[in-house]
Length: 144
Image 1 (cartoon, rainbow, N blue to C red):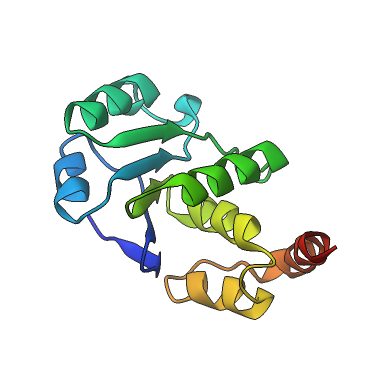
Image 2 (image 1 turned 90 degrees about the vertical axis):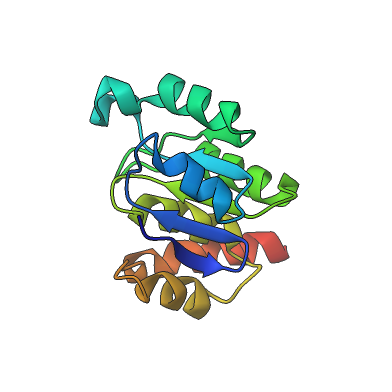
């Protein structure tokens, strides 16, 4: 598995297996966010199985299913709240890592520049340029 660090305390990746959770913990992550809806994945990788395995390792597990093309403000708020509360680095996964990058960028609007929120995920091939106007609007709201 490959950790794609967007910041020193937040990394994303494509879908992981239960066995990968030990690697996640060994890498220093203490929180795992599952951004993948159960309907997209086999039963053995769905939320309940991943949560049980993560918690057995002492990891905090958060389910925040993001539907591609239909990210909600509730998804953004949940991701932001987990990041704000985390006392350790946070690892998030979805099908490719893109949705975990998008929801992170939207949650960070106003904290980092829009250019950075687009450029950082781009290092890993995630194109957030179509979100520029939305990132700018969220940043303006956070400044108001």
